[in-house]
Amino acid sequence: MTLRVLGVDPGLTRCGIGVVDVERNRRATMVAVGVVGTSPEETLDQRLLVIAAAIDEWLDRWEPQVLAVERVFSQLNVSTVMGVAQASGVVIAAAARRGIPVALHTPSEVKAAVTGSGSSNKEAVTKLVTKILRLDAPPRPADAADALALAITHAWRAGSGASVATTGPGSSSLTPAQRAWAEAEAKARRAR
Image (tube, rainbow, N blue to C red; front, top):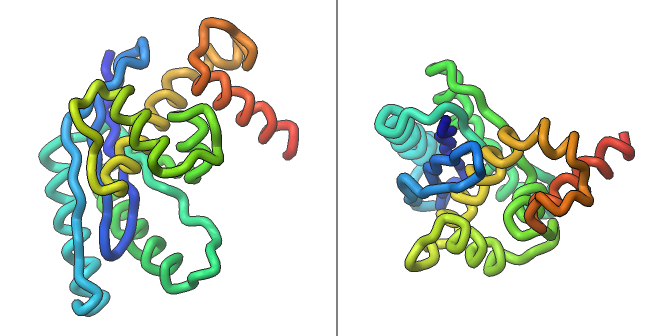
């Protein structure tokens, strides 16, 4: 069975969108990738409408089983956080109207899942996304690569919950990224 995930790296200026099909063995294949852009010169309502229309089109065209959206996290730049939150809300509402589940993942969760380290930079994420998806060239801009990374992260996490729990973080059957993910999950559970 293949899981189709639409990943969204939300933003008002650039909103990355990527669709990935992931098989049970974790083999991931890119279906589509793109970026929706809006101009800061436009009014907020018009910018959100552009994002909403694009998300509606992607959801209708690619029919994902789940959406993976980057979780808004605290930054010093309040206006950036507000824009990301507003774009996220539009995306989540579009999925909810269709009954499509939405999962939120932090940037460090995505980095750990894809590269094996929660502190990796954007270049490392793009490089590994390119390798995981067997692409000839890296997805550009970084927002597109991030959207694909979100989709991969969610599919791997959703499809690996039982096996990671039973094999444990030190299992040699896991890739380095999967091992790092399992270790991060175990650490988070202990911290609660």
